[in-house]
Amino acid sequence: MDLLDQDAVLQSLATPLSERLSLTVLDEVDSTNAEVLRQIAAGAKNIPIVIADCQTAGRGRRGRVWQSPRGENLYLSMGLTFHGGFGVLDGLSLVLGVAVANALEQLGVPAVRLKWHNDIFLPSGKLGGILVELQGELEEGVVQVIAGIGLNVHMSRAEGVDQPWSSLAMACPEIEWSRNQIAAAIVEAILDAVAAFSDVGFRYFREPWQKRDLFMGESLRARGGEIEGVGCGIDDQGNYQIRTAEGVVPVRAGEISLRVVP
Ligand code: BTN
Image 1 (cartoon, helix red, strand yellow):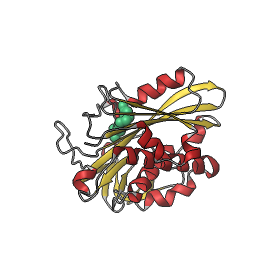
Image 2: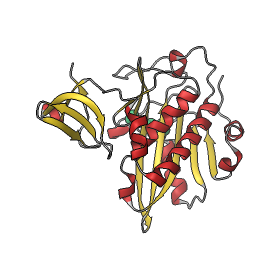
Image 3: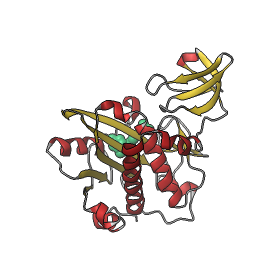
């Protein structure tokens, strides 16, 4: 059994960090992202973090459902505050991917890959995903971001998932996986990354993202086939670049999803 435990998560964090957080560990919730949003609306002072043992309405990107079986995986959301309006958020979701990859590598996971723009992959398939949701400016220039991370930890079966997937237990069975420790490592890595991102912006993260790029050198198609070429990493704004016969074409986040040409 790998039970979630609030004290165990807090004890794994450096003390000054744990004092800045407000951690809620729930047995069940609709969505940890929705719960963080409710806490922000209720006037949360510290950084709200919600972890749940299961979600009844887990949300994925593009309106998809995120399967969230009880006791198996990590469902974690954080409320992050940024100053300077929505413009300062360019590249944030890639930064979060780098942070999660750093945390997993520190825990002993080899070959963590990132699929543009923020899926967490292992060679055997998708390990997790990140859902970034924004709360409008409650105060001028102050932006709230809800960053939700779903990570397959012990899961060994998933009905209705239409793509190759993996879990930490399947990929690294020699490690005794603790969701409390994984949660603490991810929270620390995200707070570190967000501090650096707020100080120096996205450019510091381009290289760490790029070295884990799942699409690098792959034959890709974007904009419904209008663009075809070979993946060649991201630019300074976090757009994905495709080398085509006409030159390098940037594909913007949210514009279109990239597909590997079969
Ligand atoms: C994706 O579609 O790849 C992103 C999935 C993000 C799922 C996580 S689980 C914790 C948080 N709460 C949610 O409802 N969604 C995110």
